[in-house]
Length: 452
Image (cartoon, rainbow, N blue to C red):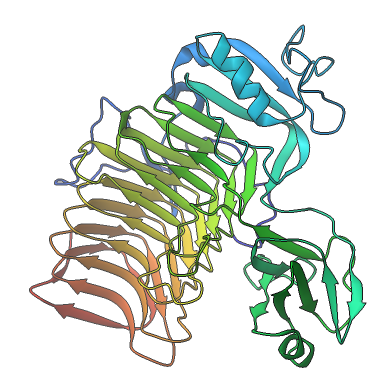
């Protein structure tokens, strides 16, 4: 599933009838079928929810105003309106200008964004402009790629490094040499220009300039500079939110951050949220950070990787009723700097979770999948590969009074420290047709591991 080229499929497509089996959520999951009527079908380790993503949000979104955005030819003085969806003749230039226009209608609307690259503050004007109505943000004709930094950067040679006048840089990646998971390869931050010159694949800042050393002159598109801007940050928006073909890089509070206490649904299809970069290293943030939602948070064919802390993170924070669904989603390479308890996918508090045919792996200082507190999570056909380079490697972990069901899942844990394919630290893990590739089973604090 990784090798993640930004174009994963769209939605919960049918498996077909041959060899499929209806899968019933386990007793005790507590899933609200009125909120999201799951009709899970499985064939081997492939499972689908049976849900149509666009049907999960306010239907007025699909008949409301359509505000168009073209990052190259648009102008924020234009109306954004077209004769039909996909007519960019009067498109705005920035996504936040489309929010302003859509909000002015006082009703649900769509923001139709022409595929291409958007950067710096063009999404929410650095967190200052958000929707205030039910909204869909749709990439049109291909992926919309947004980075909290420049997409192209020229470099000049300086004392064994290459430098550019770019301020407020928080993380730096090579885009020309991907990791085995298909992500950008992160450069190591060092203290001085001399250290940078002496250290291959490193970076530093000095006097308002960023310096890099990759052993040669970087090309215009070889370096991703993640700056101190907000990503897809929604701190006041409390209505239904739908995202499709949206791919964000960076964000000081997360690449996708939805926080206000609200009763609503949040849905994403064919999206990616990566490389969150906090303002200060001591306050790391998740790639996807969703809190305090009473309703459904559902993502299909989407990725949350390279987060400074977790990949997918769902907390209700005492606001009961959050249901999290991931279908064919991924989360790799999360955890940065000194961040601890970093997970590819985690549910907290009393969240009800379902993950179907997902893949999570190679986080630092945490477990790949972690269900904690009083959460209940059912996973079908998922993979977790734990390879922590500086701590315990844990594939699946269930803590406190949490409950986890692993159906046809696979776990693989190995590393220099303890390696646990399953860790029940007070929690209860039930297995069905589970495959353990490597790693021990750890049961502590009254935890339980059994079959169902």
